[in-house]
Image 1: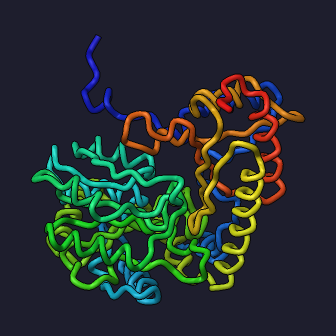
Image 2: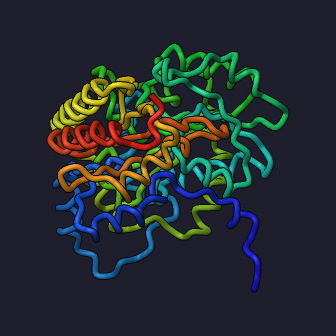
Length: 399
């Protein structure tokens, strides 16, 4: 029998999706499964996006340009200007989701064996993207007890070696919901300039910050013209996860040119999804005001409910739509599987994501879970009650 490649063997499982078969079995057995494991909002996609697709007069579903439609990139440049970022359409590369944008960035900027420093816990698929590009992740651990604040710059500096080529941050963060302050970003920019590194910033949750102020983009920081690369996506902003449209945004012409080669090799981003995404740029501000209000209510229902359960610690996130909690359990992987296989309360159970999969450090996050508050408040309250009952009887409870 032929052997698999080393990359095929080394690619990590998704901590978000690896328990899916147990959820399928639970549903087949007649139990309701409340999905807090994945960032799939139940928020309606803006009607302007649907209308654009319905009214499209295409007779042939053609390739688009490899860099994306010019009209869409022009619209994106206007969007970025509205959030304090001055870029031109030819500094925006449309990609098949933010995932492809980050893979392109890794492969354009880093050689196999190079290192990228990332605050952990981080979006679990960064592990897979790094494996695809042959890049080594060097984690800097943020602590739940500090609300997952950006670690001090000394912790980053200690990890810089001659193999370090980049730092990657997600702001607002997945899985933590942390929003980095302007002061923290400025300090990070100083470090990047001092060591001549790339700064990758995953900013797909920009609109979902709950202080009333949008977080600053790294592209708005001075002196990073050759260093900053932003990863963006329509998936969460417009509740269009299935569109698979993202963007790589950079003022570094050499990086853009290299990424464009990868874009040409994969031919083009999806045509109909770009039509929807371009139209979504016309989404009224009231949409985001309403959505933010819904997420604040959902966040507070989840965090307040969890904090009322003995032994549970859950910091209140400032953005995105995720929360990480520490449970009084032996192992989150075991607990999350047990919920689906062996427990229900009033005919329902909850699907969570074990947070250990969001760390690169072996053994970290063993008693933590990530929850996506993407469902309405009644479902979230039901989920909290199920978790309260489950933790009271879980065989592996630790206190």
